[in-house]
Length: 151
Image 1 (cartoon, rainbow, N blue to C red):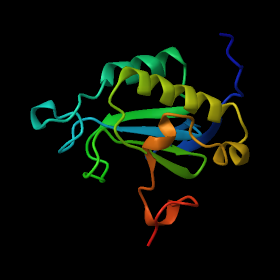
Image 2 (cartoon, rainbow, N blue to C red):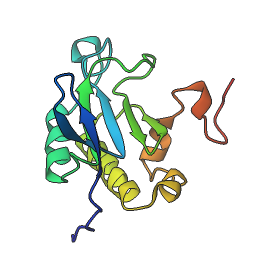
Image 3 (cartoon, rainbow, N blue to C red):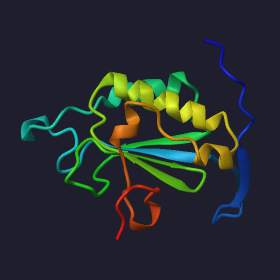
């Protein structure tokens, strides 16, 4: 598969407290993976394992470092669901639950790459492909897409 060459990420010059100036990459987004919370990845509690190594390997292999930052950590909040992933991209939030298998992780990364290949406005309107579409949910009261319950 031939990869589309993506534009270089934006950078910002930031002054450190000691006066030195450094250039900081401004990625389009961040992928948060719950792996060490109260339920996510807790096989001792009956939940599926989180394939953390695969998340990291695919992030590296696909060269997403300066486009979508990866954060594998603790609880993201919706504890009624397990193995939750939050993709913050271009100012919007996309939540997925039950990302329990290697196949789903790979499909998630394929989706991220398809979003990155589009301008921000176009990417925001692109729905998640099957089977990710059935795992997407609204994690915040303000981000419920049409057709989803919201207060």
